Length: 94
Image 1 (cartoon, rainbow, N blue to C red):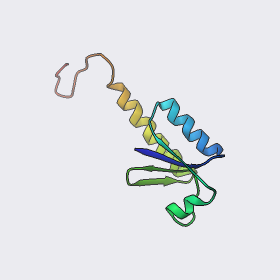
Image 2: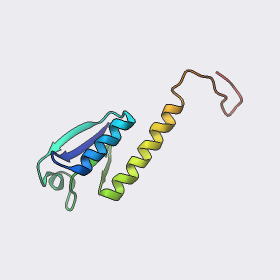
Image 3: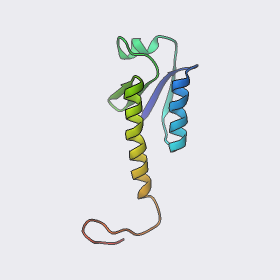
């Protein structure tokens, strides 16, 4: 499960949550006090921070890259959720 660790007032975290809502993606939201992210995740880490199982993502560039990965995963997942037939790699149809 994806968890977003954020401070209450945070435009970058608001943007992340907007992306998750647009993707219709479930996640847990954890509101932190100022400076608490560094205590939880190590020196130099500030909120927002994303965790996905054992993976921890922080910093604008790393979060942007992670969101791109998730967008692609959600897109690929949605491709196979419809009520239609397709031909697999072996030529078999549904």
